[in-house]
Length: 334
Image (cartoon, rainbow, N blue to C red; front, side, top):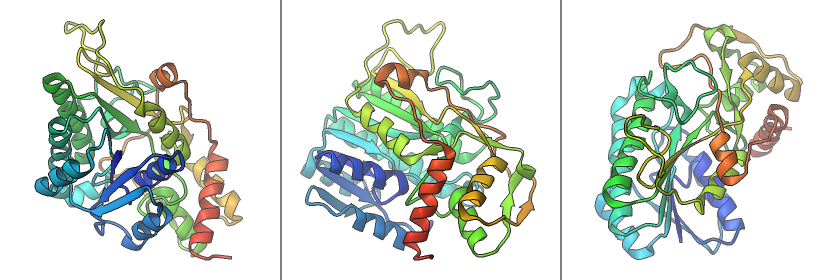
């Protein structure tokens, strides 16, 4: 039995779907909060309907409910994808991030410890690289200068996971996602917002006057990486040296991976791909850089390639096209 938190979320729903298609039994949990359209979350759950899928609406911070869930289903693998997402929203509602991303994560760690889970895989984020400018971003680089509270909570998750790997021998794998996009995506993310606004004839807001790059990563590539890592339980790095500590590995059963497309795309080129697919020129409103944002992201994925033989491969043109086809179908747009 595999437990997935945030199962009604964008990445959680896709991972659940893939595992169900592979014949696994999945228990999904989600708090179904209203950070964005709850109807979209409900429709994702309808998309997941399967005799091997069990869903429970639950808050991760509800320790008693989480304990009963683990007692009942005894999951062997936990994929923790629940979180309060969004860099910009963390400027408005910081407490939501502490409750969900810190308190919620310790609840999952404690349950994994007490019920002797074989492998905990959890979502981190490329945002942890913060003020780093050395490209591409490597899991073996220090990441101690976050520029948003969201990033700080994700860095904290990695530290908390390491502590449990050290103290209790809990195998933990953290995955730093790089700007995930695709069908069933979140309405607060750029591709969804841009597509909606362009189709409605409204201007799109382009931050830092478009002078940004992102390592946009298609959802199927993210899922493939996660699925391959399920059976790649981390083991202690026997060459780890406390005098020259490697942040990406440990003497404990702990590992960090980047999953990114390994090919940064200029924001204006990303917008062009949307315009080309829609056949509509966007009205652009150029804006200054937002607090908490970074100029560029670029994933070093050598560890992912070495350990599971996989490299994301979906082009921006293909990924954007797939999303827009889904968007038009979902909203019944001719």
